[in-house]
Amino acid sequence: GAASICLIARHALPDRSKWESILVKNRSRRNVNCINTILAMEERGVKVVIKHADVCCYDEMKTAFNELKKEFGRICGVIHCAGVAGDGFLYNKSTEAFSEVINPKILGTAAIYELLKNDKPDFLILFSSMQTLFGGSGQGDYTAANAFLDAYAEYLRAKGVNAKTINWPGWSETGMAVDYGVSDAVTLFRSLTTKK
Image (cartoon, rainbow, N blue to C red; front, side, top):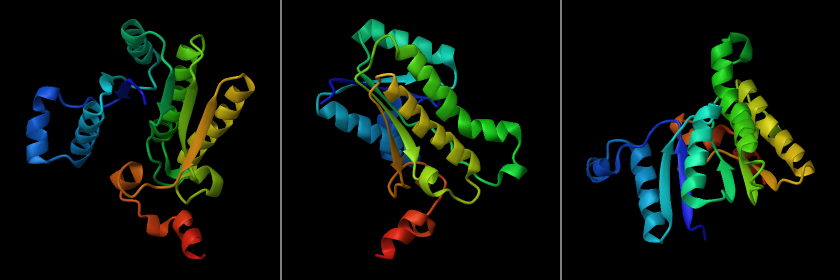
């Protein structure tokens, strides 16, 4: 039911003038899926705006949000789904590798709230993971990052903000599980559901 949606991503989507060629050549599954989804939303009458900004960078997000407020007025809500998958045990990780996983969830969430707290958005949805409930081998950084989201949503609700987390399992069609080749067949979620 949204009339206008802005997609903000760290990696810029190719210019619209190249979309037709990308769809014909079908070279990048991620770009093709993204473009087709945007076009489908636009066919339903939704205005889709695309911005390039790193959620971990407060200044870039401030610029993007200010541009949106200038064009549309109040930002009614945010769905924060940025993330980087963890891979490997913490004792083998550098500080940089650890930060790459936790920063989109921690710094990104803090930046979003700080930039919108005076606007009082209708909702703030944070995409977390079932990893915070069950854990996972080699996923300590990813689990910590998502546990922060769960705790921060609780903190925001105590302040009167309509914030919620969704603890997703791996999706089979899209997302980090697909991008990193994680199979649902080896996840705790799948093993729990197949035992029934």
